[in-house]
Amino acid sequence: MIKSIIFDLDGTLIDSMKVWYQVDRTFLLENGVENPPREISERMKKLTIDESAGLFIKEFNLNLTKEYIIRRIEELVRIEYEEKIQLKSNVTDLLDFLDSKNIPYCIATATYKSLALAVLKRCGIADRFAFLLTDEEYPRGKNYPDIFFGACERFGTEPSETLIVEDSLHSIETAKNAGFPVSAVYDESAEPDSVHIKKLADWYFNSVYEIKDLIK
Image 1: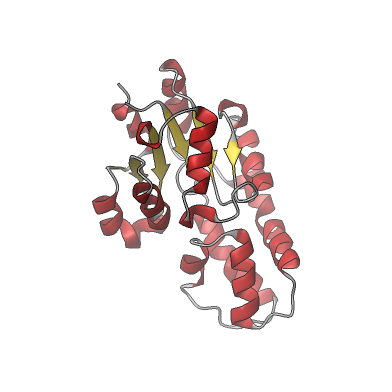
Image 2: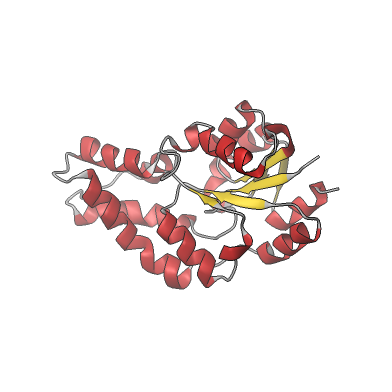
């Protein structure tokens, strides 16, 4: 019995992962790293914003502060969130269906809160979510289940009756280990992990709209 839903944002509700794969390389290039490793973004997506900044400093010997890196990355992607990134297909249709069934839903994301709000407001769905949780409230990120448990507390539902909707393997692993049912949604960026994701998740859908089939 699903009583509430926690959605990831990037790669799940919005088509944004390519932006993050580009921004890491852009930032490193502008700070003198001539050949950023190809796998850098794969490593970054598993980290919090603070952890990513720390890794940049340590691994590439950047004479920069964490605060500067965090602010600069946000600047580099802001225009994409404010003007360009679109919802994935049938997101609003799914929200309409959940509303018709009185299923509350929220977002738990590692993305900057300002950017998340910008894209959600532009796409006209910001007010539809019960709340938005980010690393600002839960700084350990999605390698730990704190953010998912926090959402459950706000909803007043148990993990076993709270569906997690994610596209990335590390977040799915965290949610499953914490006792949540998990629906994985296809995103091109997670394709290298698709075999593991399909084995681990309770359900795997090509479109987020297919989640409606889980609601009784």
